[in-house]
Length: 441
Image 1 (spheres, helix red, strand yellow):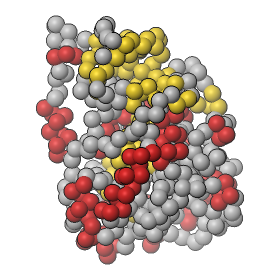
Image 2 (cartoon, helix red, strand yellow; image 1 turned 180 degrees about the vertical axis):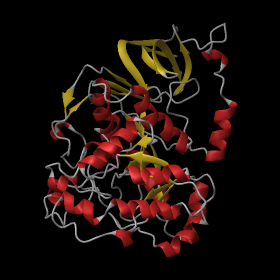
Image 3 (cartoon, rainbow, N blue to C red; image 1 turned 45 degrees about the vertical axis):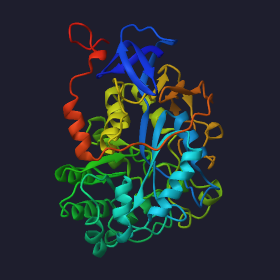
């Protein structure tokens, strides 16, 4: 048994703990443990590995700007041990055959554990994809790729998806788009306004299903999500950047980053727990592509490697609670996807990040690991993890990959099974309790 000692985040607070790990799972959480191998991190913090439910690793078809190896390397370097890849590749993941092909690619290249989204596009393919356990992505507006679904097709396609299958939605209503985004970030915001986000979410509220609204950008949109019982995530770029930023085409994303006042509202909502999750929407393009005129430059930016480090810096500065970050980056994504991950708890996967909040660095794109070679957060202060464990294997140490351990496809419980499991395991297993029946750590 491997024993890892540190100040671990267990049951909502940091405690001096010894974590026992065998066969990739957490087997014990106690004050002291004896094992075959012992690693003592002293006063350093031990957190669950983060789960990013929204990345674009561009493989197959667009590997000149990212692939599963480079994207997953960036992920684990930033504390993300599980990723879910989006379907707008070449070819797009719209059929069972394409889903299988992408799973095979990822299985041979990804350093992080992974899931693969399928696009809601071809009605005849959906039943087989659902049986395979894929989460689904619904595009309601044009963005990178040609996967937007018109209002006249939504009901037919949704009717093929079983209850409990996660459905993430790019929620913009093209009928509410205005003018041109040709000039700058301000015009891009106005061309795809908040009204288009709200209209799209309101339409979903008439469908009688549960959805996950990804990269929500506005307090108004968030309010409609809440009233309909939809889960939400927000990206670091929508919460930390705004249309006044002097970053030009680097900041062009869909949906757009908003004006400063709207960004501040979104950040406040995240801090207060009104947004369920954080996701990177890591969508790299080359510098040459981003150097085109604003109207021609593609939408998207990298972010999987910097997402958690940016948030950890805000924790260090007292602007965000650690409890809020771990809930949004670890616990809630695991719950949504039905994963055996997301907490330091007996029986769950031994995915960890180890860090020192006092070790502040600055983002330098040349030191990051995405193929694209740039970051909209250049020179921002961050806290990078010191070590990363994936299912008990040390894979990153002091900023270097130290083992060629490979990621695996995640096992996803459907929502009903996940809820049943959570309710039937509210009491910790006996191995995690002391003799008085209290948590041992």
